[in-house]
Length: 448
Image 1 (cartoon, helix red, strand yellow):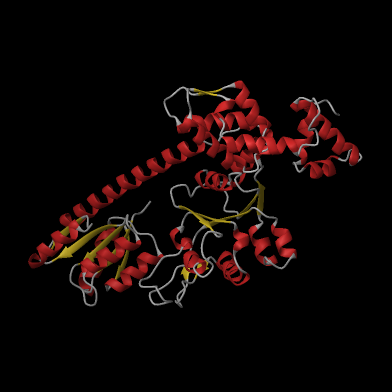
Image 2 (tube, rainbow, N blue to C red):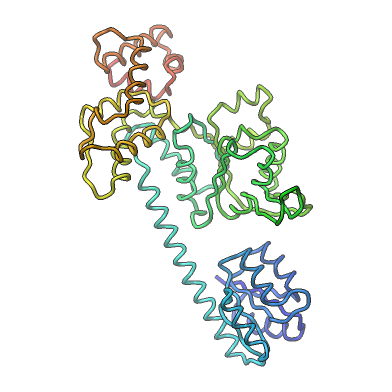
């Protein structure tokens, strides 16, 4: 792959000579005559090396260095300087320039400095890639489960991750929608770039547009400097818009334009910035219902709903409770052999988990910190959790009857099937579980 070099020099003759010689060496060279044009090029394209004259009208080399590093921190910079400006060049190196060469210079000096900078760039890129791969492996190794719904979910993630398709995640709060979004990102070709998560419900409504699209200095009271939006920060990577239903209708219209045209317009600016992002949206309500109620734009919904993924609740995947509890325990007490007793595991498995995986994770962290021994038992459960179990049992249709958990579950399934004339889809809806979960339970209890 040809390395891309940006050359900035106001001396037209010298600029043409340097560009010609570097192109002869096989480099892809773009040349501009001043620092402002160079910054525009850096904003709109990816370069490996900036080669800039120190003294230019309007913006000198150090000012260009600072601006370039702000836009592209990984960009290597070499400054061309006169002998009298060496002290300034040394200052520039301290500020992040890779090297400087003094006029007059010969071809060997130029080529040597450029080759060293690009070799260093290669090493930096390789190290960053290794760090991202390690981060990706560590993250993905923490996603665990043995249930059929979990395996089906991860199979779907594997299929769609290599694509550029927009994804709409649905599911209850605490089910791990952001974890699924990160898994899609880390399994995709974008894994080396940024994953940016935005909780639309957590940002004040009068600031959300600025947070998403950025703003320019003076756009509103308090905008004391330019600010990049989340979409621009995610350029080249993936952005997750969680709780997207919280966006107001006006902002939904602006988001639709971003999805369609892949451009953002910072607040207070007339400039449009091209962006390359993969969009993942998430909601814990049914967006179809929101559309029918006029709270969510129908055209935006269909733009987002390219690949719909339902993230199952913990009650839809109870087989994963022991696996997740063990994983959280290992994470919170690393290097220690802390176990979960059978009676505690039964209590965890019998609980309904309205807060889903997040509730289980919080409970295991709390118990790990406050444990009395390295074997967690039922008496280690916090009082509020025991109260929640008691309330759940009081409200149960089987309260007062001497039934085991499995007997109660079987009876509940049979009652639902009887009421629905053994229509599995209707029975599953009444039980508030997925159809495939109901079928799994029916097989388990020989109800076919």
